[in-house]
Image (cartoon, rainbow, N blue to C red):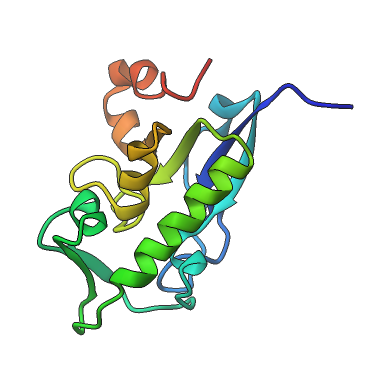
Length: 159
């Protein structure tokens, strides 16, 4: 039977899959009941870009994810290795999956050079935004600290 549920990308690490840069698994405390009515499609931009797990921690240097996509910033490991091409390739692969499965939204991990939405947007988040896909940052502890913000925070995802 064909389901009428919408597809939504989700950072694979939020589900506790072994995709974090340090190879550890840490399920998020996100309230997944808020995603009822959605098919969640897990993605890891770094792995899709060809980086191994575990891998060196990396940060965007010289701007944000938008700047990386424009060639104005880089993604570097703390040791100075340039992972810019891998991060861009991973973002492009995530976008391809989003289009393939007609995903209109993505639930992404906070504080990630790929997936962050607030602060300095990551490379994948920036590419999804550029392509009119709603990105929602899953940072449940921040939401719990301000319960008045809870309902408004997820309006992009929750029906």
